[in-house]
Image (tube, rainbow, N blue to C red; front, top):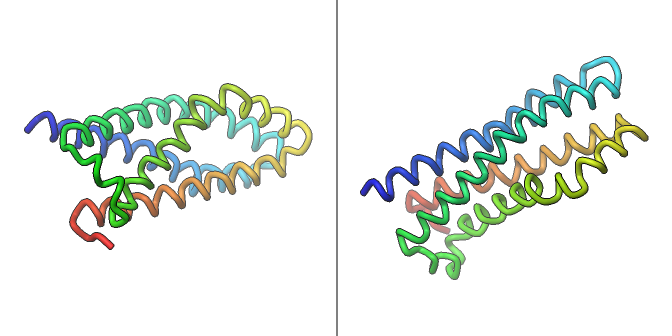
Length: 157
């Protein structure tokens, strides 16, 4: 029993901290930063906050992925990936994969450097692009959470 309950708790906790953080950045922090005086200040403040959140996001996406994999293995539910009514399982993996690639691969390889170069050339446009990207990521995350909550409680399309 504990081998299922504890990973479920960790999985949900990871998602709450991870996507909750994305929601906070997207709906509160970025709009507040946009009200700062200059685009240069906006970029500098965003980088400071985002680097701190990045550590939390890396930890929680890792926790979410490991606990999700553990649960699928222990519950023997791999076959759900072949059934369309479990679309939300595919969505969970896809959202997790997008964030994991962004945090662990793309950001260290080239995104951070691109962000800094782009911010030097046009900080206002760069900031707006970052905000739109966060809105997109939060949107697909919320759709996935709704689908997973409904689907895991028996509401299958």
